[in-house]
Amino acid sequence: MTHQANTTTVLDAPPPVFIASDLYRDAAYGSNHPLAIPRIGTVVDLCRQLGWLDTQTAMESPRATENELAQFHEPAYIDAVHRADKSGISDRALREAFSLGTLENPVFAGMYKRTTTACGGSILAARQALEGTVAFSPAGGMHHAQPGRASGFCYFNDPVLAILTLKAGGAERVFYADLDAHHGDGVENAFADDLTVLTLSIHEESRWPYTGTDDLPERRVRNLPVPKGFNDNELDCVMEAVVIPAMRHFVPDAAVITCGADGLAGDPLSGMALSNVALWRAVLQITEEAPGTAVLGGGGYNPWTLARCWSGLWGILNGYPVPTALPAPSEALLRELDCELIDEEDAPESWFTQLADTPNDTPLRPELLKIVEARARC
Ligand SMILES: [Zn+2]
Picture 1: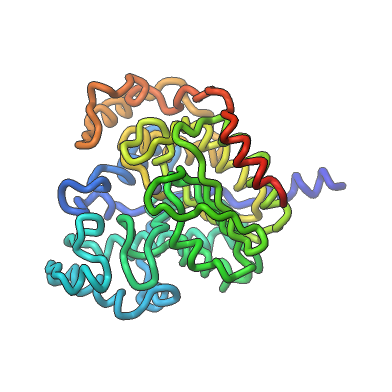
Picture 2 (picture 1 turned 180 degrees about the horizontal axis):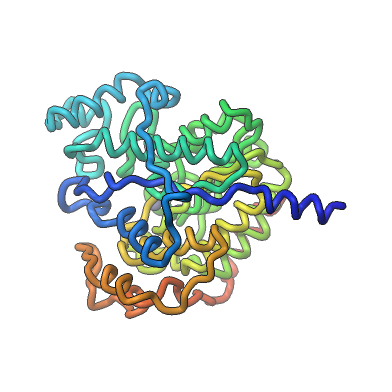
């Protein structure tokens, strides 16, 4: 009986949904910014080349309305982003009041449309998750944005809006997992006093924004700062000993995952050393536990590891076999990419020819075990 019920559930689950927009192919963030690299467009192209995307499963991202943004963001800040985009002017007042027009959060043409589209994609992903599916919106995951200011390359906090959408749609308990290399501070702050949302962030210790050191299970704020060189065995251990037990104890109605690709080996803005295979496994473990999940992107500043990670993730979410070698057009696409922060001479051939990384099987380190033992308590 139980077996039959499970089989029915699996058969009835709607297929995963991919949410994106061609808008992300436009230049953004000015020049000399870590996010001024091809990202979402390459993911879409790779998925298409692999036969993994068709019109049935791909949805165009809508734009979030001002009212939707205002569920979390202050009206004066929303207005400031809008005005700065229109005028192209960034002055001292804007920098001081809203952290806009800084090197970190530059004012660039199309900024408002681009960032509100990313929010619309995450809101749509949450609505799909309420229907019991897994929805992937790789342009989302801007987890550092604060109610009244930009922070860490993030202008509007789409993971927060996704969680609010789930709650408004009837989810009584929402699980948020942040697998980005940096602490998901904006999301944690938003729900630190809300026991209906469990936020959990795995991030590199002593790395910007330098928060996320405290683990507060009783407040449903979980943090796992992990050492530099964080490897596949260590992520597996954290998932098994902390993340999945915490999730099972909480019994969420839906989940949101920020799946930054900056924890992968080769990322210029982190010292973590995961393979994409380990990250895929972790995401899948969460989506299999949750009734519905919005999977969002996040950081990721190496265009080769990012594109291969997120397109492979889409394949994995669909149960497609990952090819051992990429087809020639995909290899050509990857060879055309460029990144100022990475010396291409250091790039391994596998960044151009394979989708899956070689697993990082470095053994578990004692310092990691200590972190896990201190936290494996609920
Ligand atoms: Zn990050």
